[in-house]
Length: 480
Image 1 (cartoon, rainbow, N blue to C red):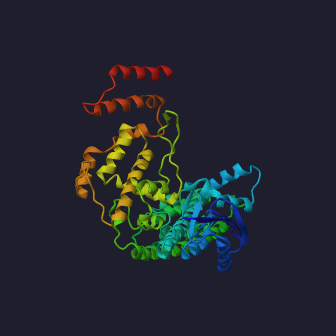
Image 2 (image 1 turned 90 degrees about the horizontal axis):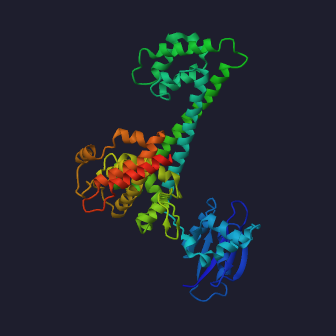
Image 3 (image 1 turned 135 degrees about the vertical axis):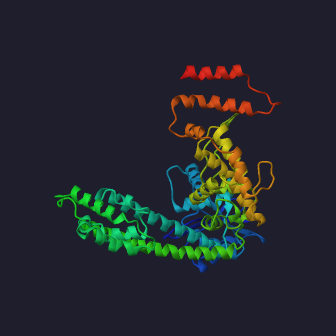
């Protein structure tokens, strides 16, 4: 297949700069344009001018904001190929061509030459179906609103820590309806003191359907009195009336965000039911109605990943590599490229799944007990296995089955029993693998793990002599 490459340096508000190269990398023409149907038609006609019959266009761009999206839609609709290059690849190539130069013309040139310089650097742009695309956008919107709600909670808790110390500890949930009713009326502790226990009770009792604890109004009154006593004669430095007005604005914003969030959750649920009605993904322990739509929105079509390794790479769960000569470094950190929300969802799901799935529990147990890893490292190891199971369930479109470590199907009750009998991490191991370990434990841990592996090794394996283990231990002690 003969290609003519069109490298487009995308602009968010400025004009896009395009350079057209033939199959040998020779420049054909440059073109500046804004995104319109007519301009894209002109660009494609210029690119095909003088080309042999059967020549195909390949449009290459960087993921600049969402400026690539209309070009990708146009290319897919007209049968052209559209690929994307990671920004750091273009950056490195630009430094090779010109160390002290950067402009749109040079970037367009580099993009048009990228397929000939490094064919593996370009990747096909995947355009999901409209429902899946909007499901993912609503998932992102839900995350943004959730973060805004969390920031308001943190601001109010920080405010009450110094304005009315001990107030948030009076409520089981510091942001339930009863607590917010108190904040809205009595963030001015002087007003709460003047209202008395009876006045506080009249305000907060009807705010929630649940029965109120009898001692709550008295406790709140006592906290307000303590605050008034603490700030007595401090009118030059603190104004409780202004605090009350500030809290009212924050609570109004909080209520508005909660209302929007409930509407978004309804939209997500309806779209999720439409695009993935079987919900087989939720048969995996740890993935429910919240994580399910998020994972489906990110993966979209599972068939676009030809292997499990490609999905792990897409999620950033591939370890870095450092080989030189005959040396090969192990235990390097993960690349962490891709969606951070995807990795967070997988971490949450993995932490629950390893408590229900015997095979995942065995992986977690091995990482903690035999390899000396901490809880977070062990869960990350479970994540890499869980993501393989997710891809298998989505591709085969079937429910997930719990298996024991011998591959036999078990029920949830039997799985729990197996985990309880064989794969519960002892508390002393958890204490040893936490970050606050003594220096002596850190020195002894490699030897302890080696001894454990020797005791559990098969009989036909080659064991390390006990004298060698003792010598290694003495070397570590002397070095320390």
